[in-house]
Picture 1 (tube, rainbow, N blue to C red):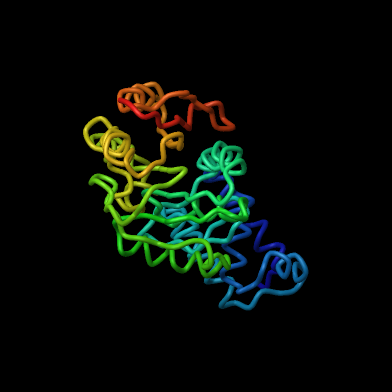
Picture 2: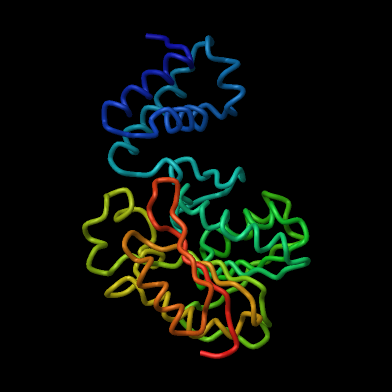
Length: 288
């Protein structure tokens, strides 16, 4: 039986809602847009038009895959972060709204530093560094990651957002000392792997079975990257420069203590919109 775009969208939204999907409205819209090749505006404009059978079947096939655990961002190959459209695939984590808190914390500092150099370490899709570059017109950003797949996505997102003049990708290992030719930065932003190894098997299927484990596994206690970055990468910061970490639930106090032990001061913890301590930041001083 023929259905309109509006009815297909509402039917899929209800199906997702019944399955317990919290973002059912957003995800239903994105799946129908992708299946039909329409923008959000075009979908709204064409709401009363009938859907070709092939488009309806593709949309419903996408819903079946999503309800089996596959995230919408991987199904449609893109997601939005801080207002920026980003290419996404299974080589990188899907950007979360929680991570926007990290950008919010860094912006006041960077806006007071003319021509600042910024390193987004463990960059993944590049979402954090690109968001900063979009908001601070005179900063220059390096997107650093060890994964070739992640760097390919970074390059795509730099081009997609017309930031090639101020943002560059670079292969670096956050668990090793920075190469000397890297120079020093005014700010390092880092959303590292922070899931304890033993917890990964118990993650939601959408994360455990689809997102890259190398971008999740933070070692036995989840804190390996915080120790490495705080100790090894302080030499890539100017004295007076700032290090901003995203942290997992229950990790903020431990990360604060790690940073303090490696010479960072003026330490602060900032919660995300849900009230969960999400960002730990500090200033690099001369002496440990």
